[in-house]
Image 1: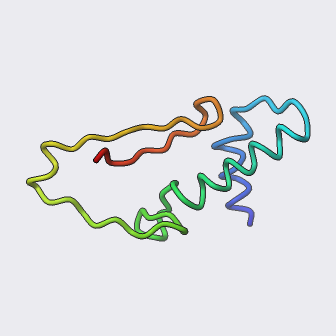
Image 2: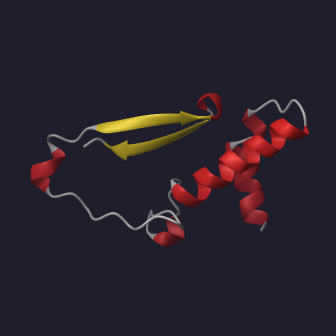
Length: 84
């Protein structure tokens, strides 16, 4: 739990000005979704807890790789995915 709280502070709370309780709840909900569905975790071999582990790309697909970025919480959090 201490590690999660430190990560939450480092990645969100130290970079965000929280206006009120409603804003805090919204930010925490968005961060929780980001943490469980998009953020990589070292102990899970760079996978997210609620997302299937991606298969490595072959050398033939790396040359034409397109990546899309989605900003969350006004650009504090960034989520990346492969473009189709």
